Length: 291
Image 1 (spheres, rainbow, N blue to C red):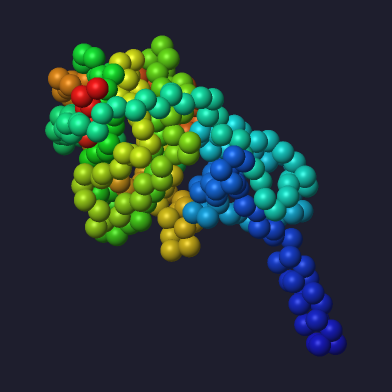
Image 2 (image 1 turned 30 degrees about the horizontal axis):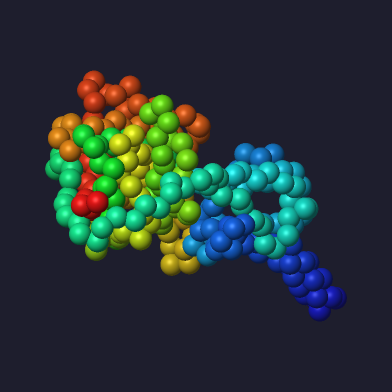
């Protein structure tokens, strides 16, 4: 009798394990993995992220609709029972600016001001955006690096966190009526940082041919969160790092800051929250070509 009970428990437990299926999210054009895509079980109002390899597990006995999304891609809504092991997302990329070849003679310079002791903490899926428009003609200027000042202190002093491993996404968009428009990167850039990272993160985009066009562009930071050793996002409210701000407009470019909470599709001007305008304190390394 006891042997029968053990066998029955084993069969039941094994069956429970087998209902969880592994899925992988892939870019339909580049066929590259899409890390940290958002998975929502719409009927239950629950959600989570894929891991760093674009993988996630889901109970195959779950019924109802699943929404898969990632900034820069078209959303996919499907039935659980209709999903295959490999799921493709289509980039929103409509068209990139034509590539213009300039003289190899160039001057490289860093523009942007100093950050102040002001910081913004982001929750999961929250975004910060900075609209940058060059002062004067910049037809021959290209962005080599984006410099992001960060802080490493937690939002509260309840738990003095010393170690962390976090990721966020960096997006670039063209400007249309002072709103983010067409993605300028084929895929967003995943930025890793931890307690040992420099307080000024340097993101090299010199191979992306991003022109600092006269009409300006948007640089957006999307918080994914802290991750564990398996690349899984940890559930928390406010993540480290925080992002530094300044209250000084820059002489090299005009700028305006925006915030987009995870539960909204609209960008909100930061000055709506505060008494005066503050700016995400980014710096740019740009190359200016002769002709």
